[in-house]
Length: 321
Image (cartoon, rainbow, N blue to C red; front, side):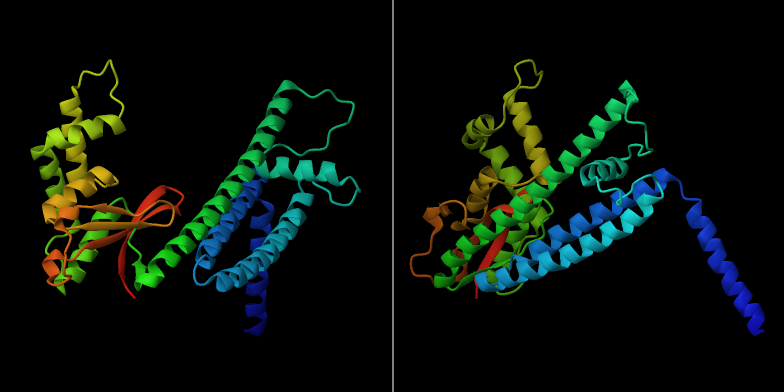
């Protein structure tokens, strides 16, 4: 029985080796690109996670992230180099620049088969080389943009924290799904009512759309200033505004100042929007509570984040600490 088991184990190992050998060059390079992309995504997520806490904590976390990513990157490069050696990439001839160029081309999907130096490059090869260079430059730009996003977010959060902390306030994260403004208001209404919000975020959307329709003369000029109307369009400005209202009530279109203006009147609430990137904004001052008593007149408090996510702007709920 033991011999049979050992034989079966050897057969499994042999099968795996054969299967690995049968991988095509394109499959290996495609896997390399995927692994590099996953590592880059992991780095961004780790940096985002590190952008929380005090300045000292963020600095310590950032250093840990850099060390871990450096180790993972080195290990991944070593593994890729071994596999690329079988595809024509060599790291032992002393010409580091040529080796690096070859590696970039290989990962970008360009042939790395050695060619005589005096062989004239074909136009097809030149195109492939150019494509490889463009891909490498694109990856560098993506990484730079991702780093900027993390950096801008950290700066914005620090400024907002300094603004809210003396007021005894903090931010409650809201799901970034396009409904963030309405979800944040729903969260605020739940707090003000001492339990469940009287309106869901879907109901708030419908209320906003209805109010904007009923008061179109108040909103249409601002809508037109924010949305370019094409001269050759068959739709009138009023029709475009109606289509926009339909989007507000039935899709995940992002809410902004127009919708905030409608919300403050729909709910008859004073709305305070804090920001780490811009001056704070008050809307519906006529509904502001003078004595601070009675949940009906208490303010809705939101935070506006320009750099929260790579996709764009975001709203969160602001609550007492």
